[in-house]
Length: 289
Ligand SMILES: NC(=O)NCCC[C@H](N)C(=O)O
Image (cartoon, rainbow, N blue to C red; front, side, top):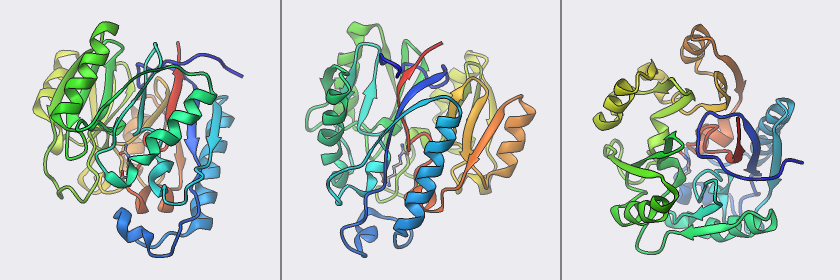
């Protein structure tokens, strides 16, 4: 078993990762409250999730897989969002989507059991979701100001990270389809190497697009039709070794042309129905070179 924690990178080799199994829904109609696309097929969700865990384990990554006790936590399968893991320990975030707020306490218990120190937490009225947090390098965290992540939350996060020599840079996200739909910064972009990202350019904040150019980071652009199937949400297992939803064929081909080894998974239930890709389905606990 690996020990340690710290993941101030999106691309350093993934050593240890947390996943949360889909818990059977409390009633057949709950998908509507969560804003899902269609009713939940629990059997399929469980099978897709298990296949993703197997994929990661085959790559030699230590997986920690937990299941929530509370059936109301349907979105808990996205453990990327309630917590940020720094080299010093975990920062508990505060969810902008109210139905997801109890996930933070549930993950806090898991982290404590794993012996990972809690080094800070976002307090009300602040909100920050992990999906809006992007490590550009270990000293630079880009945070999307979205319907889920507010100014107070970003200011608190900056205060927590400043003593750890991390600069927080906020970028505004667009309205897109409004607050009822989930649009995180990581819905728009994923790093796959220190000098390569996959991104849907039309919605990318200009400040971030300019930072990529300044840093000479190459951009693989996601085509219009693959934005809908979450092609910009790609999980790097290591530089140029990544996981993406299988239907994104043109983005996969572009990644391969750029020298990436690409692993695919099926996510009709765990990703498309619930609007979250492989980054959201995993919470890296340790990334280390
Ligand atoms: N980081 C992510 O983009 N997470 C996806 C979360 C989707 C979930 N249904 C939500 O609305 O929060």
